[in-house]
Length: 336
Image (tube, rainbow, N blue to C red; front, side, top):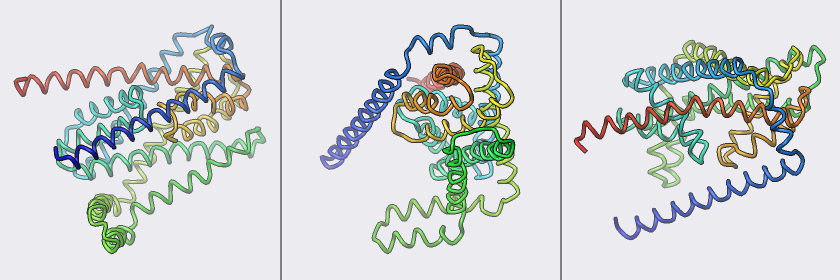
């Protein structure tokens, strides 16, 4: 490696370390603040009467949503012309879940999927665009469910925090981002703009990205179908949280369940902010502030979200096994 490249790599590693330390500090501060208002004994007490049958049911429902998510990603990739077998796509999807839960970065799993499949198919930009579209549709479906239930809850006069109205601008923003990415006009003008600014390398990447998104542009009915399927997947993920609450022994009325169907998407959206290590600290702090609107104590709210996160962690362990088996298989084939 030449000295310039070595210095650039060193600066990149230093920057990554500083970002990691900053996230670690934010996580620690949020946990410290939470524990100053809430004792660990309250959280342990909320977890003291588990109903294992319901907790296992929550694991099964989350697993079903994960298989649905893998299927959704495979459909998007297939439309983009990615010819990888569905089994390989599913394997990479589950490895991505493993990385999302065990790497100190919110996009670690997506990065792995894009790099690995992009190399296999020699279409890194195509895999990147398909993965980004998959993420945006999933987040849009989750937010849409929250807005839909929010509308019904408001008509019924069930109380919710005024911050729940933030779901509406979030949904509008997601629609605008999708419209931006799929726009023919922007797709043709944006690379040209960066070339005028003498940013040739970035313009080249943008040209490839807009070309890849152009593959989806005429498929409006297909996009609508993917969105409807994503609504089912995201509902299963919301149902996972409700089953966890019941599995911890909480008694939920219909009114509380409807409130949680609005509040849990708000917690999930907050976790898209890359300010902590895997959402640690942020998840618990936001839950303690929001989910009490559904009649839960702060201890119950934190216990529910921690337990729901653990359900995801347990399921994602199979991704680690698939990663190990894949590396072993590749090493054997290469003779190493």
